[in-house]
Amino acid sequence: MKVKNKLRLGFGFLFIVVLFFGTVSIFYINEISNSAKVILKDNYETLNFAREMRMVLDENTLPLNASAQTAFNQQLVREENNITEVGEAEAVKNLHASFTGLKNTSAPLTQQQDAARNARRSLRSIEILNMKAIVRKNDQAQASVNKATLFLGLAGTFTFLVLFSFSVNFPGFIANPLNTLLDGILEISRKNYNQRIHFEKRDEFAEVANAFNDMAARLNEWENSNLSKIMSEKLRIETIIEQMHDAIIGVNEKQEVLFINTTAKNILNLADQKLEGKSVAEITKSNDLFKSIIDDAKARKPFKIVVDGKDSYFQLEASEITVPNMDNNINETLIFANKSAGKVYILRNITEFKERDEAKTNFIATISHELKTPISAIKMSLKLLADNRIGTLNKEQEQLVQHINEDSERLLKITYELLDLSQIETGNIQLNFIPTQPEQIVQYAIKAIQFEAQQKGVVIEQLIPAKLPNIHADVEKTAWVMINFLSNALRYSAPKSKIQVRVAPVGKMIEFSVKDFGKGIEAKYKERLFDRYFQVPTDGQNKSGSGLGLAISKDFIGAQGGQIGVESEVGEGSRFYFELPAVNV
Image 1 (cartoon, one colour):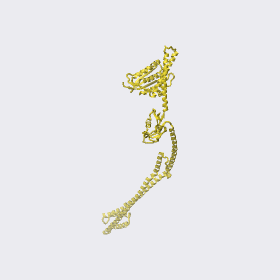
Image 2 (tube, one colour):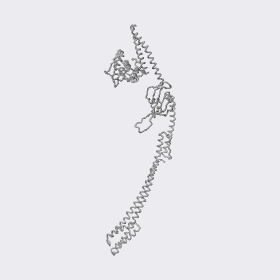
Image 3 (cartoon, one colour):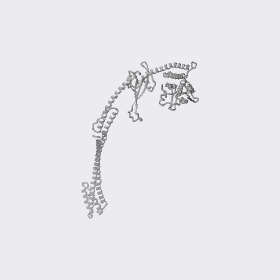
Image 4 (cartoon, one colour):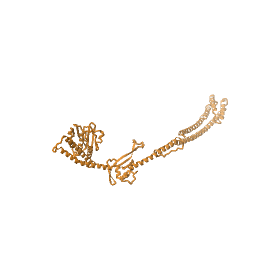
């Protein structure tokens, strides 16, 4: 049966029950009303007629006058028309006969008195009959009321029980299937795709249950197929991770180990242990190296680990695992699209690169050191050639010697830069910190490039306020940075232009800056200016350096606790600056 028909039958049944109770109530109320009407009308009127006739006899003397006879006759006629009880007719007949005797005014007084006594006796009989009838009918009415009350009580009780049973049981016809469907949906939401719903009755709920079972079956098939794919992909990924030479550790959001390959176990000396599923806190209690990897996930510098009795270098990388947020928590104010599912830690073995880098550094240091001697010999030979005591040179020879001298100077500068770079890379850089006046460093640097500036006609403008605080710095290396800034500015400045050298306090730092008014540097090159071996492309008019000067300058300033930077706009020139901490004099 359809749910719609069930509802119709249910509410139709309620209507019939209410109609039945209302009909029974009206019937018995009507019975009670009719009984009450009989008591109040017939018997009460008879008693009233008898009372009026008695009053006529009591208030008038015998013989009765005409008006008294008329009044008595009116009440007698009414009484004759209102005979309701057994025996009342005979009493009324006697009363009528007595009244006939009373109307005979010519009869003796004694005879009229006998007639009056007979009339009173008849009236008393009529009153007694009606009083008894009132009592009897009252008892009958009371019995009817009691009977009606009983039937109404029974009908009301029956109606209440029926309605109560209906109110308790009928909602179950609707609620129970809905609850069953709700439980099934909740099981599906918990990924229990084996859940099924069965209804014996054939109605809309049975159709919904069939659709639900079909959906669950399809979801079960989909889950099983996807599960097999996921398991296959999981095994494939685990195989790939296991075959990788880098150490890989996966940790979920609960700080439990998801996966760890053999390489990582060997490095951490945990080869014989089953770590998957274990808590990170439990492992770190007995393995400090594992703890340092987890705690130092943000570290960028390579670190050394002894593996198989050999120093090995590793670079730690940590990446957060994010997955789509499928949780629907309505209590959360803000819901993110993705959530963290843990982290992956990768120890990249850079031992080979470290060894190559050390070999490169040693090679550069050796070559640079070896080049110093022949370059110095070439410069000495050039000085001898330029000495007129040995012999004079023609113009072509002088130009050739000058070019050789410039190239030798450039080559010697590159050699010293390579030596400085090798010292920085090997960590052998030595700094001699002393309190120094900023102006002293500026003057030292300007003096070094003054002759070259004069040759090009470039004016060096100094903007240095008086009474600057001292700086705690290595004078030689700081001056070397200033010389590098001035040399670059001079290289890219037009003839007869200007270079500004400015020193100014900036908070607790002293800023040194060199500004030229050349063509400037494009924005795409500014971020790489301080990288090693990087050179800004030139138009061929300016000789480029080795690409090491600014990189070495950055290391020198950084080693002294300062900062270095550049500001440049195309067509407006460039401003290179560095800051060093100020000290009290």
